[in-house]
Image (cartoon, rainbow, N blue to C red):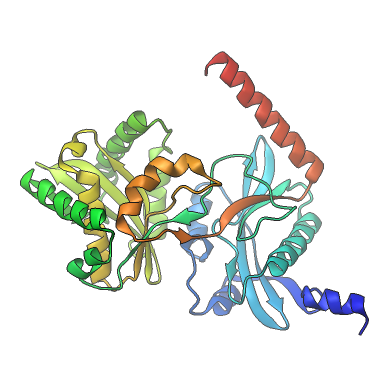
Length: 352
């Protein structure tokens, strides 16, 4: 074998293949590998409810062995189509810089051949490379905090936390109880009951300066994923909802996906009491971790404030693959980036 062939083989190119697969084949390839909910078949119904069609599922094989799977959905930005693989690909074998780059190269070629209108692919990667770009919109995260639920009991779980976190959850539990608060799972609530929860989210958004999705988005998430994968936990005082969490479940892992808290709840540490109660409930079901979904890093300093709260629940942050934009049509992608920068600059000048 020539030196050039040897180099190509070491990169996995001659023995690697990317091919489209159906949901069943993707499920078989994943097997018992932990898989984010967004890459499971059940997520397709939620994406469809938001008008996002499945573009396709792909299996990446190296040396004849399933190495990664990825599901992509159709989105648009500025009237231009792109594909989004939320928390994908799912790696089944060793994730190397060379394999990541080879998968992206093959995926771009497949997308370009099938839908040349797609401007870019948004997908996750551990290693930054020349073909990965910061997101043109929204933010990602590459660190999170996961509450370790493997100790099993509330006492053992809190003992594994940092000292300030251990004291904090005990104090929050006591303060909320003394304030007459109750915490219960309300999965299966009707739409009218959910609108009460949504009003708490609107209050949270006004306080923290973000724009929530329309109520229908959260409702669609609950109803399309169903109680097996999407749960609701609520803290109430005198029957009034003050804090809530939508918790998603995939295999042994749970994720605090969305949450809200009233201004009044700060007086009785409601959000902390609720998060702790959710962690204990998930542990009682045999879950191994509760992902608090996102914390600050050098790449994403915008999450510093929320990260300060979450770090109390775990001794160390967990590194995860951040999202990147991978251009399919580089010239058009650059034009989109420049147009968005110009719009943001104009809004800044106008103060809007």
